[in-house]
Image (cartoon, rainbow, N blue to C red):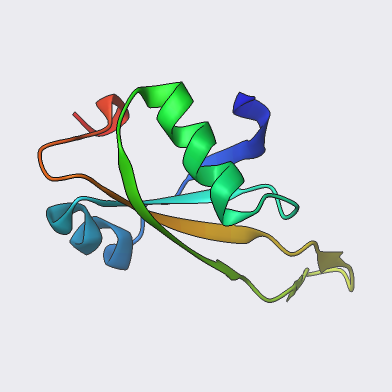
Length: 87
């Protein structure tokens, strides 16, 4: 189950979103919004209000290869809920 969440995204935009209780993750491309919602709720025990997703473009590597596409999920939690990985 934890294999579906690839990494926590820490960028300037994602740290600004932390103030409004929105957390950003790179997730498996095949997950739907409802799958991501139930995964986060079961894994961390918080209530998810909304899930926004977008797919990042493929990137060229230095030696002519191509990195695969990833899906980024921005998750908004109920007021007062926080994820323990950001405490």
